[in-house]
Image 1 (cartoon, rainbow, N blue to C red):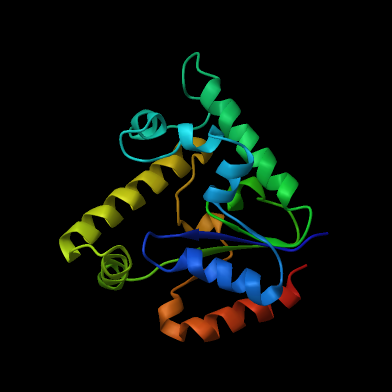
Image 2: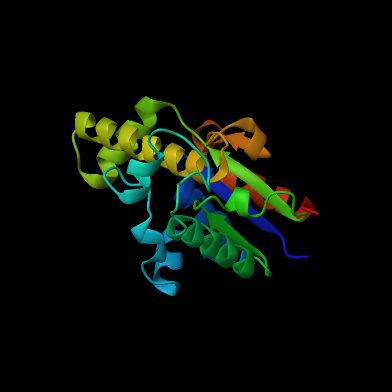
Length: 192
């Protein structure tokens, strides 16, 4: 059975780069929204959770997959995405975002990770990386996290970042980036 780490993360937590670093250290591929969009066309982008997008608008009030009256297109896009993730994870890999923990729930050989960080650190990181003011970065983070939560809630009925969907929740800044990567690589060896 293939071993997989799924990485859910707060905007600005460093979770994406952490997932990439772990995959590179392990010598396994990593998959994220950009990869899935390239491989499967605009399927993922059309129903993305960005504020103002179709999915965000539909999900802002909560709900679950299948709660849209007469609309199967969104459910079909979600199912295709979950199928794509399951197909990719037939081999060892890291899946960043896209509800990977949900797609692989109950499957052996997986570690479902959620990466968080305090808002001031996330704000400073996003401001630095995207050359924004602290106010702009804070607004971007709040919007992104709201959209991610709506996306997850809409399709899974679960709480994005909630303890029920993840095996491990960590703040990589607490241990230091290199130690966190090393820690996750040690855990990788024990995944069954």
